[in-house]
Length: 361
Image (cartoon, rainbow, N blue to C red; front, side):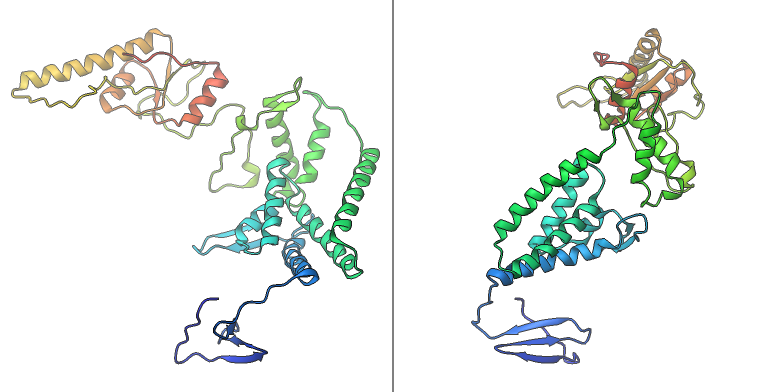
């Protein structure tokens, strides 16, 4: 318990509860004032079990109104003033910052459901709360918690058997994905995209089928990238069968549209090599400065010619290059994009079948 500091103008309402006092400030917030040396009483047995169940039920009641197609969104405000509007169970629980141990278990339950399945984050928490609510009545009848847990395990096995019996199997292929689209539409009915859930379901299915290995029944979701832009409408969402790199051409006079591009992917700096030791160079006349400038220009020109000889007509560079190199690339008709992230470089290499080569020097 932390000490309570009061201002002279603070009004308090005090209620005496045995050996301690329950104090309410002017905003109605409760404080417990205990005598010095008094120890906090711990809950044990049935009282502790009911307290834990009550904490879980409180969390579940918060999420229950956001479940299903008629569920409502929650508006969450962070201490920094950021506002989040969502009906996703995992997002709501993470933003709540719960302190109770049982409530933290429900947060972990929702997070694991999101990581493993990707859907049903609200349903698993509501189901857990309903099971605990039924368990409370069994505890009042004197049934041991272990027996109740064993009963839930047996009920789960029976429920899985019944689901297997009543489940419908459907066939799909790379050309027939209508059944997958219908399945995806059922998961979007409670989201904010429900008014355009058919196009979004088709986008999701087509994106997964584009990177799926149907023979191994494996999908590498890391090959699917979501890129959001501020503005526009939900109907403007589109599936790009390629790599989206949010960068501009390095020079304004370079062409913006390149057909049948042959890319040169550079993971090394597009600049002359730098000495690894400390050095100091003094230039005393104009001729020496011009010689250094010409040597640097020759380095850049050699690099540009090597790229040109390889047959490439587009340069993708992970690092930057200065204006001299940019000017030479423009003169030789080589459009370039610089400061491309490592993840985008790797995706471009996978999509084009490109591999890493040795540096220029």
